[in-house]
Length: 137
Image 1 (cartoon, rainbow, N blue to C red):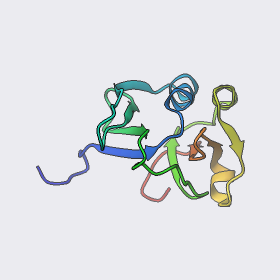
Image 2 (image 1 turned 90 degrees about the vertical axis):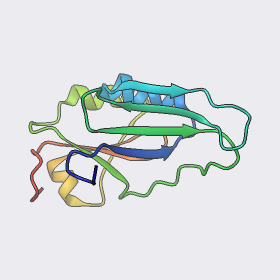
Image 3 (image 1 turned 60 degrees about the horizontal axis):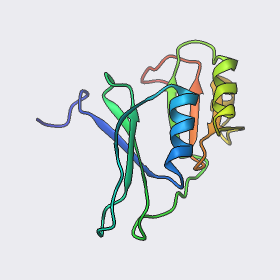
C-alpha cells in the first residue's frame, strides 16, 4: 500500500525514564499503553513503550536503555500538537503538571495565543491547541 492520508504514523523518541514518561502521557494526558517491551542485554535491545489511542492512526513510541540509544535532545520547536477544537481545560493542564509536566511559554506567539504548551518529563513539548485542525492552522 502506498503512503496515503490513512497511513499509520509512529513518533519515536528516546526517554530517560519510561515509568515517569508513562505517568505523564497516560495519567496526565489520557493516552493508553498500546504495547511495551522489557528489552534485554543483547545489542540493539531496549525498553519500549508505545502510547496512543487504540483507534488512532498514530502512536508515540518511547525507548530507553542501552549505550547505543541517544539521550533526549528536544528543542523548543519539537512539538506534538493536539487540536482540541475547544478551549484548553485548565483541569487537563493541572493534571499534566501533577504528573510530571511543566507549563512553559512558547517562543512562537501563535501557540501562546491559541493554546498551552507543556513540557513532558524528557523536555519535549506538547501543545494543547484550542483551535480545530485545518490546513490553514
